Each structure stands twice: as C-alpha cells, then as structure tokens.
Amino acid sequence: MLTLGLTAVMAISLLAGCGNNGNTGTGDNSGTNTATDAGKNTDSGSGKKKFAIIFKNTGNPYGEKMMEGFKKAIEEKGDEAILKAPDQPTAEAQIQMIEELISQKVDSISIAGNDPDALQPALTKAMKAGIKVSSLDSAVNAQSRNTHVNQADPERIGRTLIQGVSEMIGGEGEIAILSATSQATNQNTWIEWMKKELEDPKYANVKLVKVAYGDDLRDKSVSETEALLKSYPNLKAIIAPTTVGIAAAGKVLTDKGLKDKVKLTGLGLPSEMAEYIESGICPWMYLWNPIDVGYLAGFTAEALVAGEITGAVGEKFTAGSLGDKEIVADGDGTQIMLGDPFKFDASNIAEWKEVY
Image 1 (cartoon, helix red, strand yellow):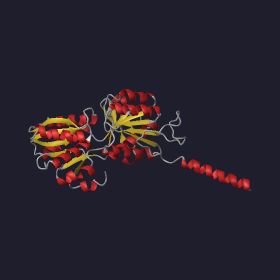
Image 2 (tube, helix red, strand yellow):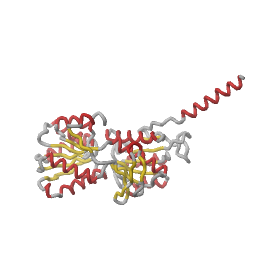
Image 3 (cartoon, rainbow, N blue to C red):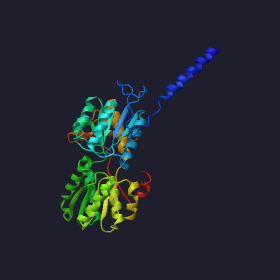
Image 4 (cartoon, rainbow, N blue to C red):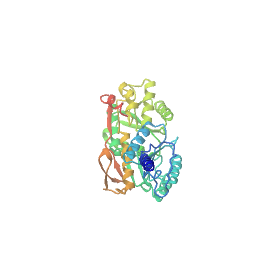
C-alpha cells in the first residue's frame, strides 16, 4: 500500500511539471532567449515557436506599443515573442540583431527597417536559413521579405496630410516637413504622395520649402524644428509624419509661443499629443493604432510559419480580433494593409489619450 501511494504521488508531480512547461513566455528586449532544440526551434521542448520583432530604436513610444501588439498576437497563439530594438536607428545595429536571431534559429523575424536595401544581405541569409521574414511599419525591399504589413494606404496618408495642412493655413503659405530618417521607406513614400498632392492647381499658393530629418530622435527633432523656424520666418505650418517628430515640434512651438503663427499636424500618439491638441498648437493630427499594427504583424508571421500563406497576392488569413485580411500587390512585392488613417482633434482626443 505504501508503494502504491508513493507511486501515485510521483505521477501527480510529473503531470504538474508537464503542465507548467506550457506557460506562455514573455519575451524581452535583451535578446538573450535562445533555441534549445536546433532542429525544431522550440522552447525547452514545450512546442513553442520563436517569433522575433525588431523595431527601429529604443525609447520610441510608438515602437513600444507596436511590440506590445506583436507580443499579444504571438502569445494568443501560444508561442514566444522576442522583442528587440537597437539604441540607435541604424541599419548596422539591426543587422547585428538579425545575425543573432539567425544563430538562435528563430522561426520568424518581423522588422521595421531602418534602411530598405542595407538589410537585404542579412535578411536574405535569414530566409535561406528557413526563417520567415516580414516587415512592418517601414518596409524592407521586396527581395528581403515574404510580405509587408502596412499601417494604411500610403497614398491616402500623404494626400490626407496635405489636405489637412492646407485647410489649417487657409490654402496659402509656406510649409515644411519634419521626417524621421532619410532612409525610412514609409516616411519617403508618404512624402512622395504629399508632393504629388501639392501638384494639384488648388495648392498653387502652398509652398513646400524644406524636408528636414530628425532621425526619430527627440533632441535632433527639436533642433531641426528650431532650425526650420529660424530659416523660414514666414513658415505657416509643419507636417511631421513621425510620432517622435510631431511631439518634439509641439514642444518647440509651445515654448516659443507660436500657437497662432505656425500650425502643426502629422502622425502622433494621442497620449503624447493631447496637450498640444487641447491647447490648439496642433488643431488635429492622424494615426492608426500601433498596437494593431504589431498585432497584425504577429498574426502575419504566424500564418507564414504555419504555411497558411506564402506572401502571394490574393492569399487570405485570419488575424485574430482584426478579422480576415488579404495580401495585395505592393510594387515588386506584396503587403497587408491595416486600414485608413484616423483623425484626432479636440472632439475626441480626451477619449483616445487614455488608450495609447
């Protein structure tokens, strides 16, 4: 009887131990997670696959929210999310992280590229190693990925920003753009569409005088804003299609008391821009939910690894709470679009600033 009792206790303990192995991993920014089974890319035999995301740089609230959404999607599927971002927004720093992830034998890499072409050798190496590669937010070139997750239609973003700023300044005056890095594909695409919108005769009295680059660094964005104001004393508005840039510009315009002289719009986080919208420094701005961008990227990566999609035009998959998504053409490659840009103004900012 004693032997039978001890056997039962041991069996229960073993079952409890197996159950604990199924807990969802949290992932982190350290990059210390490593694959323990070189053949299967699993976590300690638990069956979890490893999905990595690399954002542009640390200290970026937009990127942090994006990685939060990515992590949520991966954990909903019962797998492990590895969250990574370099200190500086450079391709070289991201290449080092890609190499580390290849050695860890992850199943997938999702990346917001700091340079569309410089990352190609490293990402191609990852794909040859059997790793599924997708980009999000800022695309890498088509040869470096299986597909891309886009926040919204680039044309709609670019044209909407010009339409908005023209309304703010009464269709007349000098405007400037405060972008992120000069290599950021998403920023450059939006700027090209802004310029195309400006070709319409109805903007004959709106003049784009400068495209400045703050490199998605707060201090540099502040300096670039100050330089714009100094170089163009008749400047009527600034468009900052970057969350770091628009917040920096909002602070500069506030500190200099330029509420009624220089208007501000662009793409910003409601939580960071609420004070500027409420004060009138920024009459309105646009964005999408970065959590949803990361969430969609997570389900895209899961579908690629599961073989549900390959990245070809016309393929469809279900992206959790976002519903069904379809892959569409994007130049030489393909993409999945999240949705249209959303307008934030004094009528709704109080509600949204508590969300993200």
